[in-house]
Length: 239
Ligand code: 5GP
Image 1 (cartoon, rainbow, N blue to C red):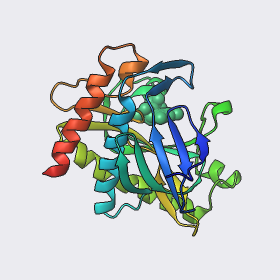
Image 2: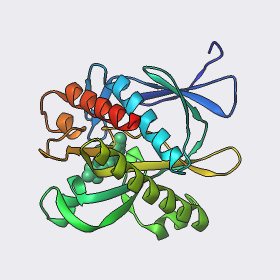
Image 3: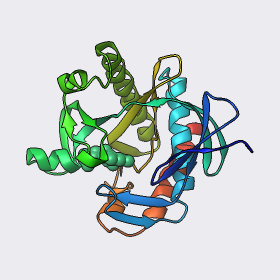
């Protein structure tokens, strides 16, 4: 990978070009941030766990027909992915009401709900990722109406497939922040990352929090939890 050039330097990931213009190398590091970057720490081996967890999740999704950017795992910290044009939109799929939505609606964290809630956020650090609706998306020209339909389809399917995958590993997917991108031939596919950094994951039996909320709320053993998620998903993947 001698020709690689840094094309995106995120807080927690770096993206490099490769010899193939349609392929990028994503490098996961151990930096962890929360509250829009206000809280920051290095959590040993977190990048290794997230690289492996994301790779497993994207492979399961591909098997179930959810088109996504993952190509192959290169090593403990790197994966090859299809190059996409970033769409500045986050879709948060919620299987329970937790975090910001529980606060917004004045309900208990983890409230059980009869349907999945889908929220759109405008991915914009300066504006702190505000919640927006479909008409804002079209008004801002972020995507077309057909593309938005496809984004809802992909993220809803992804949520269902991931819920089942985590369940097989004895864990509950409480919510997930998902993102899509546009390939060079104009196709919308699932992209970004699927890990305890952007999903709430609870142990099904004990309710133990196994995700980034441990870091947000100063709980101990963040690495141990991420490692546990990785190892349990590895076993479920082999079944
Ligand atoms: P909440 O809106 O409750 O804070 O977050 C909902 C879900 O989306 C959680 O799983 C959280 O980790 C994830 N999430 C929300 N905003 C971001 C963000 O800016 N970056 C990442 N990586 N995840 C986010």
